[in-house]
Length: 252
Image (cartoon, helix red, strand yellow):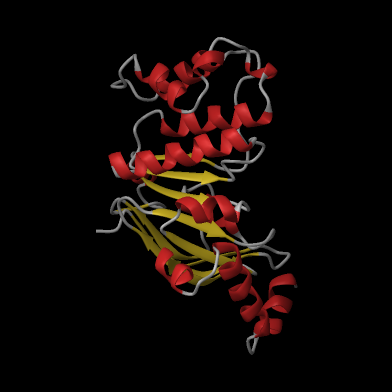
């Protein structure tokens, strides 16, 4: 059974933007990269997957539960960070995670220290978050998403604001958790190079549509970097018959 099953979902706004007829699935241990230009619909898609907004059409199932009908059960094994890395600025990392941990009464007390160590924030755990850099706030958000040992983690631009060392640490954390614990990741990012180093599957979005699903063998056997592969398929979509009408419809 798929951990996540998305069937023909659409969400359109008055300005014509949104997501159209998207379908895909994720399986245990996948590191799935969601890639596309600004305005492609990536964040709208993530919000639908987590029940923050409802699709106009189609269905989403997480761990066998319909997200619209049984939201609490569907999200029980999901951790996510979408759009912004929010935290209480006047509190330190430990207190922020202690608040989050109140939603998980069975969580061991040592879990907070464990997860802060994993994301590289242990040396700064008693510093107020208002003194954190953007990259440190991103790491704290990742810690919050991983706190309750979820089986699926959904991340929107997780390496935004990180320096090179921070990006490497996040990549290693994701790879290790996917390999050793079988945690599934769905990652939306502009950092195609980073995704190319950790993703085993990708979905390419353009103008609100999922135009390509591929696994790592496809771009490697084509002798391409992931960046080259993505650009090639976006360009091919632009040149395809009917693409211009799709764009005009999307922007109306």
